[in-house]
View 1: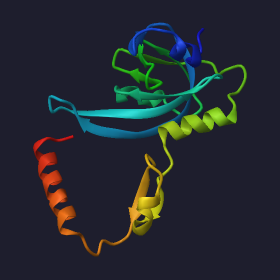
View 2 (view 1 turned 45 degrees about the vertical axis):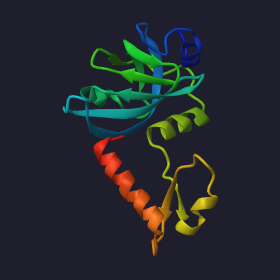
View 3 (view 1 turned 135 degrees about the horizontal axis):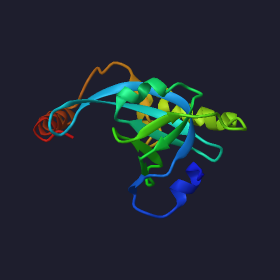
View 4 (view 1 turned 90 degrees about the vertical axis):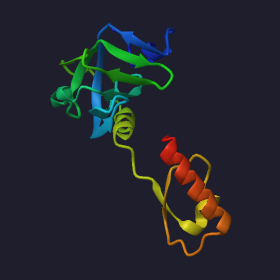
Amino acid sequence: MKTLKEIFEEGGAAGAPYNTALKVQVCGVGDVVYYKNSSGEQRQSLTMGLADHTMTAKAILYDVTKANVLKVGTTLMLLNVIIKRDSKSIVKTNRSKLLKTSPFLESLPAHLIKEGLELACPPPAEVVSINKIKTSPVKTMVSIRGQVVSVSYFEFQYFLIFSMMSSIYPV
């Protein structure tokens, strides 16, 4: 049976179906997320962190009715999933099978379990005061806390234009 590392490193399409059984352990389960698809239907998804002895991977479950087998520490066999090699993630659809199976012979290393948990339930962003936000590193997720006391005319105009454009052309 192939490992996660072997599956993600082998060639092929960026998002290809994978029909062979894959054995993984559930390290973390996120909250159910509600969203609307392009046709306006209300849908649900669930994010999980999975691991084997070689690496961790993020998994997205679009068939939330299968969430009853997703308990932290459970070992699963995955069938008919989609492997996204570019983002190192696994997508489970309504055609995917999730089967409980026997645990790994050797327990997973603690650092892999922790990584898997952080993929499913990321830690909260660091809180930064509003006057120090310009010095925070680029591409770092932060939460800003402070009070806006003045806004320049040009920044306000930019905000209005951006607000109008985002309502016309949603991102």
